[in-house]
Image 1: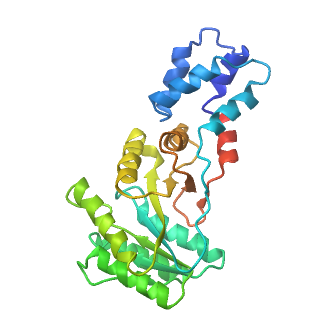
Image 2: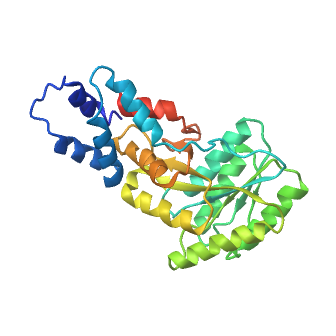
Image 3: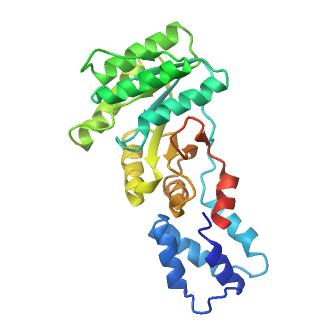
Length: 278
């Protein structure tokens, strides 16, 4: 990613482009989806840095903007129930399948709940993924209520002593209020069976500040415990990860970098920071 290489060169005084102005660097950072508030803070702090060991100092500044909350999935009494939320088009259903694969490879027993019933393609997609990796998927009849499927999934997970239940939730209803009300209903119904352990929000890194807006809306409506950031490859838009954590304090737990099952892994803060400073 290397978002801060020109900034470091400027602070160190070794920039070969003598005409580079702070405003140009500011524009570059804004284009990387860091957001105006964070960019302003970072520039103010960077201008105070000594030039001798600027990389180390800059890394400390960036690290302070990341969340210090736990990044691993919760553990404890089975089943650990994970609701995956987000708008359609972010890679939500695919992320559910990839997370299931990730846990399956760690020898965890996993059950899937296809509660995005308003989108038949999502149910079919999740069922296909489950069949491919040998994980059962609970579905409902055509047009079934999402909360009903989620409830049935929770009952099955409890009765069969699955370690993890991952529920794919609705991503698009008539309007924002409908969607948030539906998510709240799903959570309440599931918790009649067992507590919800995690609510993971899927954000597409390429959507820029729209991703930040989604994170704000969902975090206000449901208790989001972690993020899955998709399409976080090598592009400059990797800045959205830092922006979301700094703004909301919600830890990124997993990242997706491609379409294949293996293009999904736990978020590594140090590796991410090294990429920003490369």
